[in-house]
Length: 295
Image 1 (cartoon, rainbow, N blue to C red):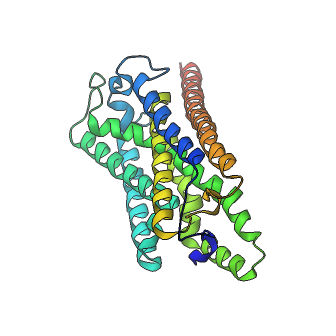
Image 2 (tube, rainbow, N blue to C red):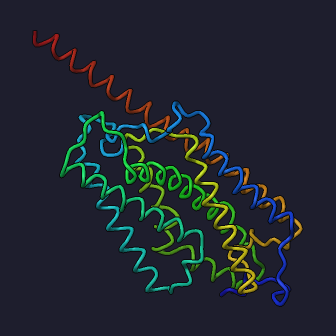
């Protein structure tokens, strides 16, 4: 099945310096963003947030029990499906960005569930700031939302069309078998519903500088794909083939796309806050109207 992505010269794999430079620049600019914390309201950034933003919902009374139950249910589902997928297909799937992101999503629900459970056992006050676990929940959420959006977008708008356009009918059938099945629908579709459900339930604010972790995450996978190519002589994804004449445009596009996804993630946070605020205003207006009628 890997023949589809084989390089024409696996004996002497080479990666152009321009591609390596793009990857290195991604690491540097991401680290710089994390260091200077642009658009942050304080020098400590997200560390100054109240613990309540991690454990309460932005809707209704903000009871943490509903968020805990949601996180626990998704943790069980994501972990179970990830294990089942690995057993049925094989451990080689861990090489792919899809599974990296699926297990990142699973890890998010793990630490978020733990944070919620702790708060139920020992309630937090508004004056308590986030600890290391809660900061990790905030940071990983930002990367997970963007990562899931990247996986689903690149899969259905780039990868699948590329594979289905192959003149070899056998390879087209293989691609359709790989992407049109229960596991794929979860890792390339339902994953978005899972993380957006979490985003719209919780109270975690958008922190621009934390998106620097997304750059490090994507660049790390790029480094892994280079390593895999040098070891195996093949590319994990056809659009990552650094020996193609359009490789600089492809890698540059991925780098630029990260900023586009940052904007999209920011918009989703804003939409959640706007909807929650509108809902609360409607509830208050309704309560006021009821009080007037009963008075």
